[in-house]
Image (cartoon, rainbow, N blue to C red; front, side, top):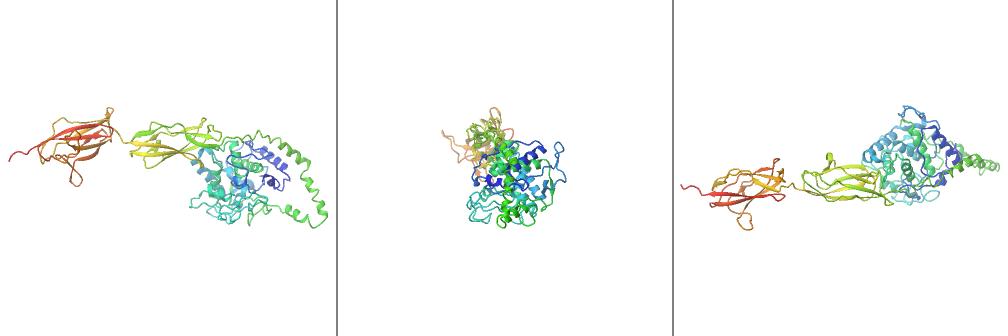
Length: 570
């Protein structure tokens, strides 16, 4: 596809060589930019992409090759604040600009390690659709009519057979790139987003499309503040070195300054209506018709025009452009694009986290660790990892957070914040995922156990006696764990038999439940000081000595004697 696009440069630039010279001049007139990772003469594979059309977000569909003017919106060294006004080319329609900035803000909150600049979305939007046909969108950000690329039928473009039954592109035979960011339907199905919170994922809505493009560019472990990662991201969108240079040029241009213009008034690419890109619809501007009049009039009408075309072709491969074009090949050193063996994220693994257990209310002693590994089997730094507490639990990370996102260090590992157990006992899980990818999550099993006390003792010493039919004095006990008061520990009080293997006694003293019925087993909980006071105990049954046993979670136990006396004779 790159060879074909090379013939579609802006009408003012006759050859790829001239365009390259324009790019160089533009770069020289602006602030220093990052070098391209891709070679000048050949295509460089991008992370997670393949040369086939369906391996790129846009299916390597056509795009506009117009370049920005050589005069920049702002001069190098001056303020980088966005000017209120500027050249027509630096103006971006209001809704489109708002969508790009909103996408940047959303992704910064979920994948800060990616460092997505909105100017990159603007550059891609300019090249793909002329900023949504110059901002011809409604109040919700949806284009007035769909923006569709040509059928990807293998006739001059990639061959991608229909994947959506025509739902997005209206073509049930072949796929077409759709919307202001030109997603092919199969890619949209995976990456489509609801950027304007209307409950729909619409590729023709600039808010939805901009957020989807941002997430796609941030896939894996990319840090778009790094030149190599940014280049790989752009190449994964459309696998062409010319495309990368064109997007890079607009990216640098927008970085020097831009301004907001009303929707529908944006400057459109000069290639409108040339047949090399989807029709931008009515109201388009730009596009010099002179080139098209030349092809239509020159071949047939006059035998002499053929003589005219003959001189014109030589003008294209003229020695001047050809020579600048060749230096490009040496610049092509395949060494520069050594991103071919570039390590890409292959998996997130457990970095040696052991058993995760904690007592209710305590912090887990073990910290959860994950490691990112590349497809070369080596640790990978700056990978965004999201840890999420899942399951029926009130456990949470420090600060009460159920989810946190952190980046791996130089050794490829990342440690989650301290995990704290809540009061709810039982098992739950923590998952670690590579943010924004579909790679399998790492699952850590965790459990919260009940608070414990290894000892419990009655606090009073007076003998507990009561006449049948009356109640005993209050019984109070204190539970401790390793000598310290055990607060909020479960205590079970049971009237037991005096057997070798005691069981619940069905005779003698008893408690009452909420309905006032006799019960001989109760579940209680200690207070903050580790003490528990039993409810009223009623003396019943024949005179004699009975036993009350108190037990705690953790193994604490004590047996207390209760003496029932016969009533005095009348």
